[in-house]
Image (cartoon, rainbow, N blue to C red; front, side, top):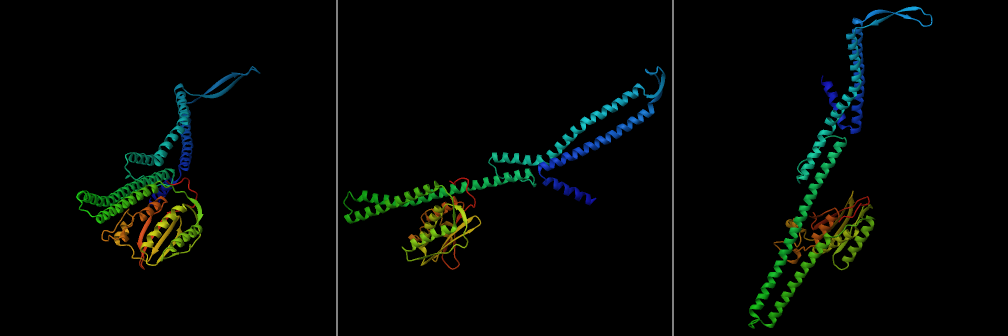
Length: 409
């Protein structure tokens, strides 16, 4: 009987994947057919009982009847049954009437129960349980129901929502971590000029009243204090820039990549005219239209080019290309490239190579700002080294092919 089990299993899988509406129609059709068969079977059985009882208990009687027209007496034959037998026959008729009413009710109850058990109970329980987990801020419970019907799609939608909540929670933690790193970096870099200023002021307080500081030494000290004041001003301005970037709204417009490439080339030529480094913009392979914020992309480009000009020997290459809904903007230079530490840390605010304290190893906020702008535009910023030597910074942006419903904040 393996073939029968196989057929039943296939039917079960087919019903499991069938839509709720079609499944209900199938169950109702089966219920109607079963009810009609039950009617036919019940009628056959009760009619057979009635015939047997009637044949065994009925007896023939003769009736005499006077015809009104002819005034003649006519004899007619008929059948009579005892009162007990007649009561039994009435009970049989009553049973048949009860069956007519009860069979549809029983069929509806059975169909409803089976339909609920097979199609609704377990997925609904999973969704309710998932809602309870989400209410407790616990996103570890997966909401999965292996079916292609509406309940399976509903569970799949809730599962996507759960995963999206996990991603949003992770993004929130990353944002909080970035904010903590930014505050820590700002506090660290702020502490150094303050410490220097404190040392100079204590020196002046201790020795100036006693006349032990020469005019030349005094002016050097004042100039040193002025440099630290300028440095503090720079830090406060960069922090202001960071907060202003967080408030930027992404405003996407429908434009072509060729138009964007022309503006990229204009910016590259403008920067190349003020430097000894050549900047080459590679032509766009495929002209494609999409919705993106041109100003954000060009601002990222300016930051990347300014950073690349500090490290490039004499050559910078800019690549602009799109793959599906992602726009890639890559800036490659022929400088020294990134160290292993810089590959992971250079996008941190105010990052400075711990082993090299010269100015060339201080990245400030350029790459940090670029990364923030890329993420606001649905992309990211990645750092790598070229096999030919030099650094490659790749900025990605999400460019939708359909109009956005709202602006991203």
